[in-house]
Length: 358
Image 1: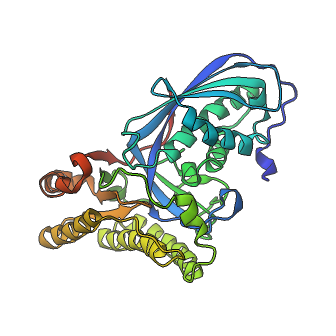
Image 2: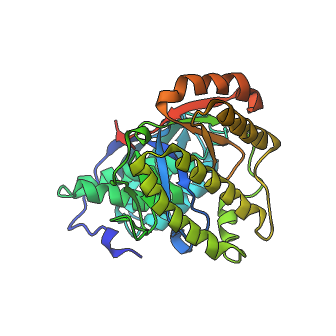
């Protein structure tokens, strides 16, 4: 339990209202894989916050009689979604001690994504962070003296309890999560905006997402994280992540694109190597994932352009490249890679500044 985030109002008089936030997805460069209890990461991670892939959530609330249950409905694009109920209920139970006023309110949650819901892009990060920000807006109504720093820290803290990587979707454009000796203010409890020196080339990086496979993963991320407990390479992997963040911090300062590419692609392949060497082992990449990776390597060797890939825990590919090389790179993507995507679907995105209120 984190006592610093427990809300203790002098008195509470609930009133009806509405808040609306949009929160983006994010893509980790140094991956987190393996977690302890209460969504605490086994190793630190570092991510780019995206801009166009986002969830917008409206939270309507009104007073109700206090009882032992939560009162809420969840709508997705205006349609009541009963199947979302268990996940939101579990989230509210986790955060209740930190935001006890939610038991005094009847909630209506209306959410939508800018990307296809069944696209294979994880919507839990953007979805949980948007909801956490709405809940924190209610708390800010009750605590007029709340600082902006506390608001965003606690929003990140709450969103982590819904989905670990969601804590990296509150701010931008670069966010760290997990205690790291060389990053001031880093914490296992919430994501922190990366405030170190960043070369201009890394301030407007592009991310084109290839939707290779939109089906449900045969192994959930939660199960995959748990398989790191008895993994033969776990300790080496956790040490590697710490080292790679130190290296990436220096790369961000220098602007060395070759070193960036080598580290980011190694991290992506290491993540999937952990899956392939766990017990039981599993593979989330698809044949088209590997085909695209080889095409990217071939393109880079032939052109000298700085296109690289990274992967989440799935088959889809994030293609990262400098904005100055966007024209030639997008031409290659559209001419050579789209045929590997399911229904030829892809999303053009870029680094963004984080969540915003409407």
